[in-house]
Length: 625
Image (cartoon, rainbow, N blue to C red; front, side, top):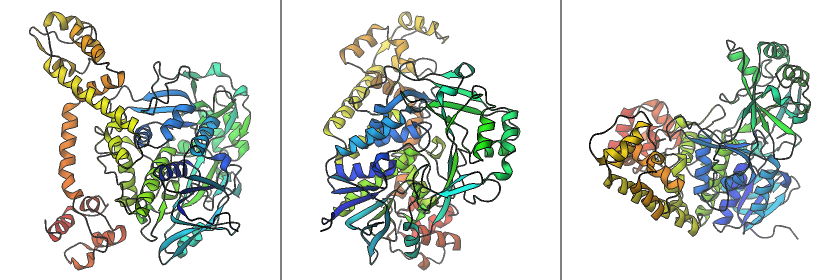
């Protein structure tokens, strides 16, 4: 008798950030779900740095939270420090980031998943998929057990034929101390998929007891920390652990160069492409030879552990070279290693082989999410897993898919970039990738996405009620400030302290708040503002939202107009079986790219690199517009 006599709705392969979010989403929506991982002790493992969020990634975590995913809650519950990055810039650039307790993060994921109804677990390696006539039927494990399902989400991370490099040594592995996964790549290639190799790296982990903290700069968390989740079930931190900063030097660089001839990065042993925006230390001193120092962040791995992550010192150099060079860094003179840094090469599948739902074009019911698609970063992976889990559930229930547009979310930008442009180096999200970043801020992810999520059964009624209250209060506060005046006698003392030009006649508060050097809290002493805030129980979040909507009204309006223009092209669907060869006036390059990528809308077609505006005009005419 088989352990798996029943058929699952969704099987998720891999228990990293993508797999955990995919399993949670499908199960929460009502699908009978199985999460298979090679090691259930490592669910939601922070394989690299012990942090969540950061530039553009913090926006993604907020979006995952607004959509009913778990990453924001897990991050809040395991945070040891919170910082809002880029506060000196406009709100479109503000990005929340937490430093996390690595062990607590993983434990929190495990316990939240165990409390999720409809979700089963199994620990084993998946060696292949079961497919019939282009349709997914389930998976096969290394023990030969067949488990059947209506859909499968592959989230294999760095495990597919993973190869770890440390100097002259190389060995199979998907992560330090864990074996690689074999069989899936070879089978998918036989089924017609294209695959490639990518690499990423990680720094040494060291013993904090061996460091001299008097030689480092202190980097504390925010004085008034915030949090990721919009739900009141998580609380901002009441105490925090600091990070520290130190720097490399010409001596450190010279010691590292001594090992370059044995570096797999430079001697040709690693042939795949690594992340451009998170380079190894050897790559940095090679590419930026004019810089005589590079910043290193000394990051604690948790509340109690002495393990420290040396952010900025990612390397695959021989361990003795790593050790010698790191000992020349101020504060690291007596450093003891927990483990050396390493590089890892792994298989990925160019994401132009996917639909906008994360389903593969070749096999019905098979979804890819995370590093298997060529991305890097926990947040990028988690968001893809969430969308794959949602869409797997929707498809097997014959419901319309959930596809976020570029104007809806950073998640929409990420997925559209991947499926439309593909990637030949590990893809990382930046604010600059989003053309509507004034609309896609971290502070309004709940306003943008909660209603959509509630409609699909992921966001709870409580979540919807919270966001409706926030929206209502914000709108009434903006309206009040537009209608309420202040006299010169009231407002000039405020301007005085802010070196802002005085006025000689009364005007609306809305107009005064539009001045760049003033905040809403500068007006808090005015009775008309005080009374409104008290009577309406205005929270700091509503106050922030009100201020942003007033100060950036012009920019927001401009972007909304752009979205409206593009929407015309978004609404023009291209049939999946459309024959581009019939249109003789298309250029050869555009025709070939359309056939390969199979754009779903005219808007997506217009974003394919190498496609000219004239070819889009030809398509427009052909579609009868």
